[in-house]
Amino acid sequence: MQSKNYEGDPMPLVHATLRNKSLFSEKMLEIFVLLMREDGNIYAASRTTLDVLVSGETREIVFTWPGASFETPNNILLLYRRIPE
Image 1: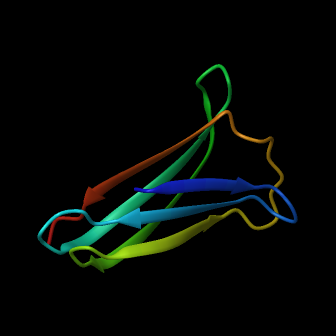
Image 2: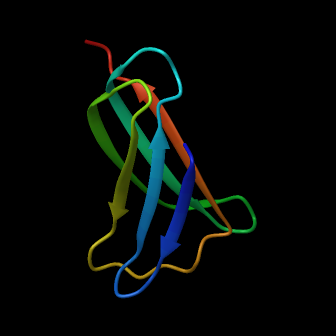
């Protein structure tokens, strides 16, 4: 991951830039974003999947919550896992 940015208007969304620094392509990734308050509690989550992120590739992904209204997060946590084939 290279960067992440929260926007709250007109709806909450997080822009995240991912970069595969490995020598190999990553296949079937599930990516999660967690929005946290100052006290460390998570108040929103979202997820998406990527079929492939090739070696050296940089890709922007966007997480959204249509129709929601959130406070600005104190911390944004991005997690990923490989989906078993």
